[in-house]
Amino acid sequence: MNRKWLALAIAVLPAAAMAEVEIYGKMTGEIARNKTATATYPDYQIGEGKLAPFGATTRIDSASGVNSHIGFRGSEALGNGLKAIWQVEQGIDFTDGGSGNTFATRDSFVGLASDDWGSVKLGRISTFQNSNMEYVDPWTYNVDTHVNGSGIFTRTDGRVDSAIRYDSPTLLGGLNFALLYGFNEPGDGQPKQNTFNFGVSYNWGPFTAAYSYLNYQNNNTFTNAAGDSVGGGGDSPALGQRFEAMYSEGPLYLAAGYQETHGYGSNLWPGANPSFDNLTVVGQTPNGLLGKNFKTKEAELTASYSLGNFTPRITYAYGWDVKANDTKLANTGYSQWVVGTDYQISKRTMSYVSYGRVKYDQNVPLLSGSGDDNEYTFGVGLSHSF
Image (cartoon, rainbow, N blue to C red; front, side):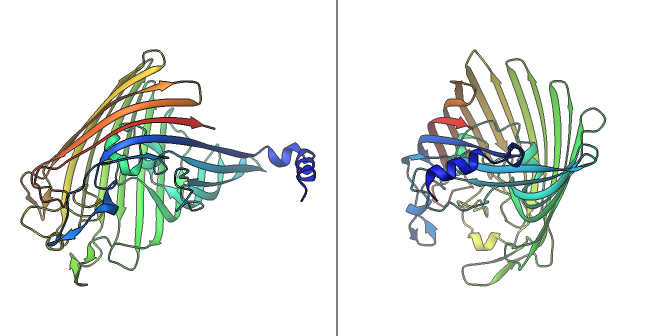
């Protein structure tokens, strides 16, 4: 169609037909210096059963894993306070020609909503901690530069395919809760797994507290390099629980979090490889550990104070030694800190600089065999919301 005719056709559409459709998103560009497992994963070399030590890289990225995205959403009033709601949202990478971009990679759903009884959504939907928590993680970073934020502590956060989620209205002056169930998702080493998530939060004045319980079924059997199945067998779940609290009053922001996870390897521990699948202990092979039931405990603190357009911020996270089959594995924890500042250029445009570093204990080598592994990222970026 001729562009002039297309513009005219759009102009004469009834306003009501377009009023409930919104285009929104965020574009974040970052230049970062990384020494991380994920950032250098393509450069890994196999040798003598281990992956070679990874070095550092410098690159420009669109922070698509966490920040850059575009979405479309809308609603239709159905009467008696009920409305139909829908959303299609996807992460975008605009620094490499868009390779790998896929439609509806983020929260995308259709549902019903009411001020009286809440909302029900069907589709690809965030867990409660991904959508309603992460108070300890106000940082801007990419999946590859997870050290520049709380990518380790929030590693179990994400979205569930084939999911149904119910969100309550606000009750008792500040109480909200949500229930999510994912049907027959592909499982780690199992044909299918179901996912259950319950979350609750309460807000009173400047204080907010939240709790989330996450259950992955059929998550304890894996296939090793030889093609053998290892693990606990059956349908024992992998579990995660997290509590977070936040205080925000004027320029002061404080947040704290504590979580426990357990499962047969899975994605519940930040240990050895780029997908955070399994812990590697010196002198043992990953395949020999996959069948063990790991339990982790971690805590994180974040504080910031706004000074005009600047918001300097610091985060500290700590992971205690891991338990495998209820036996503590010595020197298998980690410590991490992140420091940086945001600068609010305008209401929708923000620049930032941050430096993060994580130190894994000597028995958590990131497959480099050094026994003394650190990851770090220094990043400078610009972000614009629309």
